[in-house]
Length: 137
Image (cartoon, rainbow, N blue to C red; front, side, top):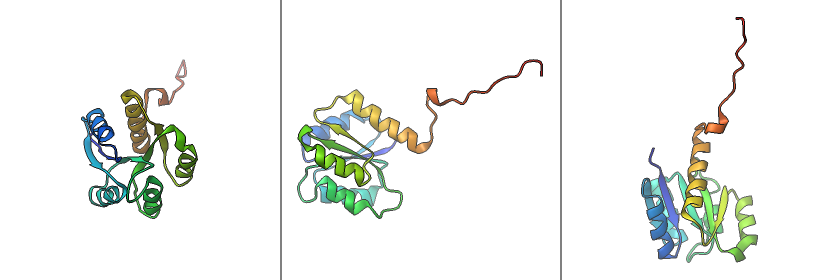
């Protein structure tokens, strides 16, 4: 199943790299927080990869603006190592997780796809319920 994924980051190289990493999904990009808010309202993405530090509106401001939205997207923060205090605030405000830059494609894909599977209730191989079969019945 293809999902809409919004990549909101002011670094064009990161946006392009993540577009490539999620080429099997519908990828939308935004270069600042205000653009991200417009895309979220118009496109209703399933996941937002949201940079903490962006012009016009930073990631925390975007999170605050999304607080009252019904069926809001899953938010995964993108951050530099020096922003851990802001990351903790973002997690308190409802971000699902965070990924530090620089990141590896396989790690970010695993985090995003796992979050989507959890939201949809998709069973993973380790989640299968076990049934005990009685002998002699």
